[in-house]
Amino acid sequence: MNTDTVPSHSAPEAPGSATRHGYFTTSNGVPLLGHLHGGTAERGVAALIVAPFGWEDVCSYRPRRALARRLAAEGIPTLRFDAPGAGDSAGDASLPGRVDAWIDAVARAAQVLRDETGCARAVAVGIGPGAVVAGHALLAGALLDAAVLWPAVGRGRQFVREMAALRRLERQEYASEADDGEDDGTVAGFLADAAFRDALSALDLADAAGSGSLAGARVLAMGRDGIAPDARLVDALRGGGASVETDGGAGYGAMMADPQAARIHGDTSARIAGFCLDVGQDLPAGDVTAVLQPTARVADGVDEHPVELRAADDGPTLFGLWCRPAGGAAADRVAVFLNAGSVRHIGPNRLWVEMARDLARRGIPSLRADLSGIGDGDGDEDLRTQEAGLHDPSLVVEARHVVDAALAGSGAARAGLVGLCSGAAWSAHVAADDMRVDRAVMINPRYIVWDQDVADARETASASTSVLRRSAWRKLAEGRVTPRRAAAVAHAMLTRAVGAATRRRSSRDVPPAAADVVRRLGRPGLRALFVFTAGEPLLEELEADRLLARRDAPDVVRLEDAGHTLRPRWAQERAIEIVSRHVAGDDRPA
Image (cartoon, rainbow, N blue to C red; front, side):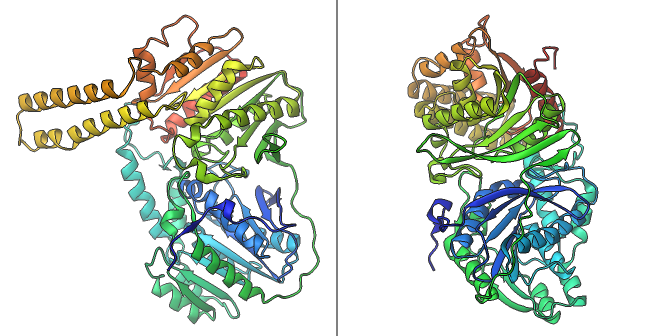
């Protein structure tokens, strides 16, 4: 079997199948953002992609976009949407009854899909926990004729167990006095409180299918990279009257890799497309009614609407989402949120969404953007697979175009920039040169200018100390080596690590080009702020070169051990406060 993956740029949309972005509402009026690829369902069928939860939603976002584009190119209009309290949709993570609201949202999205495309038949493609949710929507009478369940898992509690395992692993990454060890309800930075976990655990698709009626329905039950679908579920679906096909589900793991590396498997996307076309059987399309709306009231006093941006006349189309105070009151500053590495414009752990809405309530509009090859930005994501690609100078140029669009679209005279990781580096470059930028918050930049020698030296030092942690300290804990011997080993290994780093690097800890950018952040009229969590290598290097000791140096706030992307909830709440105050010009201590 061919194991090649198909990135989104290799699945171009067919003529007339451009993406439309807009909002629809759930049965109780919660606005959800949708992305519709394709137009009228000329082949009789359309697809609805139901996303997974949290970090898996972030990782699989670009692969799901690639799948939607692939289906649209085959004549299958496809709708993607953000669930209530997720992504760009309204609500927050504490929304009560989130699982029920998720199932209801699938039913409402199926109606929107039919209205917008005129499809005779609709197929839900559920991924991760979204598969259990899609299956329950089908059983509950949603306007769906078929479902792809990837993976076909009968019980929601399996996904809850996986969340618990992930939570235990990530607890090893960070721990601090601010984190008291209690369960803060987050999994990989996303709130999954006890009520949500209990509700998801209670979903049993096999039991529901066995007692429901699925006469005439079709299901493609997929496994995970060759692990067979849940046999109990397959039997229950067939017992309920559904026609069930099975597939090994190749490429599930690759789809859930880190965002810069995640891809959709070519054979699997072709299998899903073939299943959808077989469901449709080239039936004629019906009437089409425009339902998606360009703007939504996503919170009290806060309106949002999506927009496509041009990086240049001949450049890729970028994506942005405006967040404005309701009523469109004039503002003298606009905030610009740039990607956190390869994470789409919602930001790490959906932080950019929370920050933007908080700023809107303070009267400050904002634009959160996807640059090329990231999120909904057109372009080749293969250029973003390595850290060097995320520091390509072309992305700084694109970030400048986003600032131009933000200032023009808001009428503001000044801009404040916010970015994390590579987005923090883009923010630093733009803020250092653009006199219209008077605020910048740079969270955990790893590099200001990419330098392979620095990267190699850091890797060497990290590997040495990692070996020390795994071996000498374990032996010490087990009583297999004396404290004096452990100290001697530590000294020797650290000496070798420092020696290796010194040999591989220039005499400066911070390369001259990066140091120059940091110095220019002290220009008149700019208030620049670095936010660093513990263990960030750039902070240590900036301090070693005394670049932060200058009178005009950027301010620095430390958040102790919160992980690179601020996963503990306490750190997220602190970051929202810091960013909102800084961008709003509130100079009181945050």
